[in-house]
Image 1 (cartoon, each protein chain N blue to C red):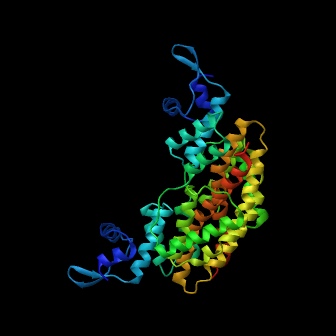
Image 2: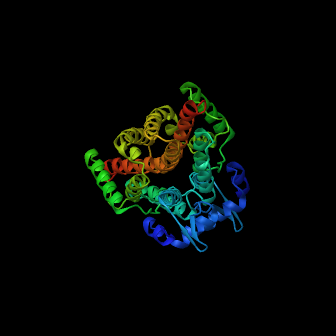
Image 3: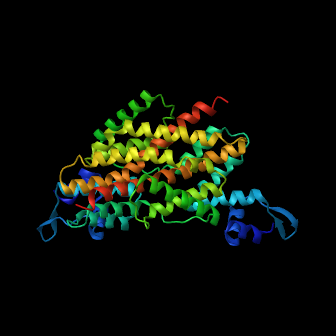
Length: 210
Length: 210
């Protein structure tokens, strides 16, 4: 199909498609004449993935590019691909907490990971974020949430087992890699919006009639 | 204490404190002379909350202000305060999905909410985000994750019950409101980083030796 048809099939404007082509997010079409290229189903699929990452998960373009390059690599281990999706998702900002709170948070998280036997890179950005968050809860005088860390981790393990099951339902390596990336990123949005709805509902029950 | 001491106690630079004062995020100190104000423990506490919202949860300044105004209102119902924190957290961007996928997603989510008896405002931004996310999973050819929606919701209900329990451990209304806001926003970061760590661990088990 031509670029206009690709635009219609995906609801992405032609100038945006041209931008993705220039930035290397979308592979070039097959040249059918010096001025014209033809696009296929793979382009439709890739464009939808790009839009989901940018619009829904709000991943910056530079990181979308990195994720897609990783997806297109035949040699990069799947574990590395997941790592890239993770880095695109994890905020790297740090919060000032008291030293005491940070030391206690580090001990609590280390204990959690050891007890559960999780295999985690000590440099994983999510590890720093988790420690920061717990330290912040203590610094802000809200230790109760942090105290439930283990129960949180229980529920999270159930999610994750589900997600791995859903992802491995796909047979080919290409599909598997794509599901891992989509699952990591859109699964986040799924859980977060469910949580807000459940909170709203419980909050309505508890606090509107009072 | 003076502004310099407040800066030292919270590790927030004096110019940043002055910016928060000008923007109305932080209440003015008590004037002790025409050029000098004195700050107390309430300022320390409020500054830490502001930094957590901005640095860790990445809430925009305009929305931090809205949340804090809501916190300082004696009359706004707690349910409304939670609603404000939610709106600050929920991305409002929308994703193009096929009409068919969106119709199916709307039906699935409506069914979920009815079955669980959740009381949710039909205009809640998290509702639109959830429907969009499920439609996107279908459009991207990843129905398996969306199919597990009910199991996700089960685990999320467990989180939420925990969070409500943690929050109601605080006695006064002021403390309650503050915990709700902190819990809603930092709880999100807590769950998200735990999920990434659990995924990394399972991924390391499954795919690094292959």
